[in-house]
Length: 285
Length: 156
Image (cartoon, rainbow over all chains, first blue to last red; front, side, top):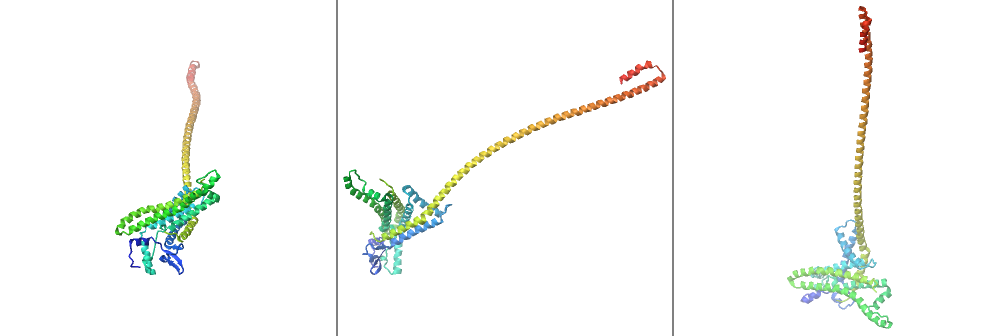
C-alpha cells in the first residue's frame, strides 16, 4: 500500500475523504472498512472538529459572560460585546417577534460557523499530515489510510444539520404563532386563490406543490450555499497546495480572499436564519 | 458527499450549543450591555441636569452679588448721610455752645465790669469826698467847689 504511487487525483481524493467510523459485526470499524455501512456511518473528524470548535466558542463567550461587568469593560469583554451587539442589532432589526431563542441561536450559528470556516485558513496539508504521522507511529496504520478533514463546513452533513435545525424551528414557529390551521392554510391557499369553491379545490394542490417547494428550498439553499462555498474554497486550497513552490504567493492571495468568504458565509447563514424565522413567525396573509 | 449519521450527531450538538448559549451566554452578556447603556444614559442625563443646575446657580450667585452690591452702596450712602447729619448737628451744637459760653463770658465780664465800675465809683466818690474834705479844710467855699466835685463824680 505504501508503495502505491500518489497521484494528484488520489492526493485530492485523500484530502476530500472524511475519517469514518461505523459499527460492524466485528465491532467498531474505521475508514475503508465502512465503505458499505450506509447511513450509520459517523464522520469522526467532522464531529470532533465541529464539537471542539463549538466548545471553544462556548468557553470563550461563557468566560466573558462570567466576567462581564456593567462598569468599564476590558478589551476582551469589549470584543465579545462587539460580536454580541452585531448579532443583537441584526436580530432586532429583522426579527420583530418576541422570542428569547432567536438571538442566542443567531450568535451560536454566526460564531460557530465562523470558527469552522476559519479552519480553512490552516494550510491544507498540516493537520492531515500530522494525523497521518500520528496514525503511523501510534497505531501502525498506513498514513494514506488516515483521513482528516479539518473544515467541518466542507462536510455536507454539518451544514445539513444546521439547516435542518433551522428548518425544524421554522416549522415550529409557524405552527406556534399561526396555529396548525394557519400553517396549512399558508401552504395551500396561496399564491392562487379563487372565490369559486370548485376552482379553489383544483388550485389547492398547485398551491401546496409550489409552497412546499418554496418551504423546502430554504433549508436546502442554506445547507448547500455554505457547503458549496467552503467545499470549493477548500478544493482550490488543495489544488494550490499541489503545485510545488509556486503555491506560496497563490496560497497567500487565495487565503486573503478567502477571509472574506469565511466571514461572509457565516454572516449570510446567520442573517438568513433570522429572516426565515422572522417570516415563519409573522402572519403575512 | 453523502448524508449519514453524522447529521444526527451534529444536529444534537447544534441543539445543545444553542441551548447552552441561550441559558448561560446570551443573557449575562446582553444584560451587561443593556445595563451599561442604561447607566450611560442616566449618567448623561445627570450631567445635563448638573450643567443646568450649575447655570442656574451661577445666575443666582450673580443676582445675589448684584443685590449685595446695591445694598452695600445703599448702606454706604446712608452712612454718609448720617455722618453728614451728625457733623452738622454737632457743628450746630458746638456753635450754640460757643455762643452760649461767649454770651455767658460777656455777661460775666459785663457784670464784673459794672461791679468794678460801681466799686471804683464809690472809691472815687470816697476819694473825692476825702479830697474835698482836704480841700475844705483849707478853704470852705462849698458852694464854689461843689459843682466841680459833682462834675468829677459824673465823669467817673
